[in-house]
Length: 263
Image (tube, rainbow, N blue to C red):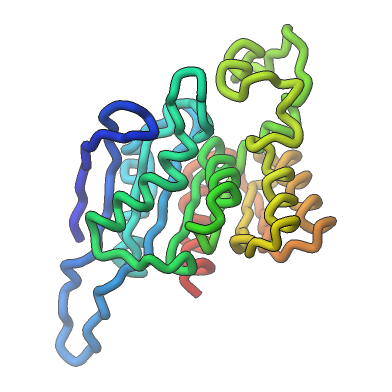
């Protein structure tokens, strides 16, 4: 198992960026057991939550163990509280970075499968939203989406007033990230609009895995998105169980989600 920190100049973000990578190439050979076919590898682009960073998944979860166990390369970029969407005014295209550029760059750097069915995007909270948004936006790159406790706050902030403040984010911050909130619904930052567009263009929709704890403060928006998928007759997996917005829950369901993805 190689654990790397990679620095490179991102065209999408117009600057040098850092991402962490887990590359399970050096698999130990056990006498009497078949050798693991090492190439090409499946890949998971794994996004952190609000106020987090590139070390979160490695520091607080068992993702290194899972990468080795399932022989999946894992790439962990930084979202910098920007919800993994594009900021055209600053020319900081976070969505393009995680949804397209990073996939292409890592495929050049490592022995990865170029098959979308072997390419997954996942995350929790803000990263769950980022996985849904960019998994749908760049459906040509990803075969499966793993979204845990997803912060699909687009449901709550559409047309928010200037005094909006939910204790985590206020109007000024949300406007700086999502732009004009009166134009949010139906835009490229709205997961429902992105999915409907895929259906209109007869584009294959990535398989979707959703999980949320019953004590999670984001349970309501996860229910809304689940119900939307049902109404659109989009096949998906939705699971919930006792748990809050915690690493205990994400640790349990990243393993379940990864097992679901590799099938």
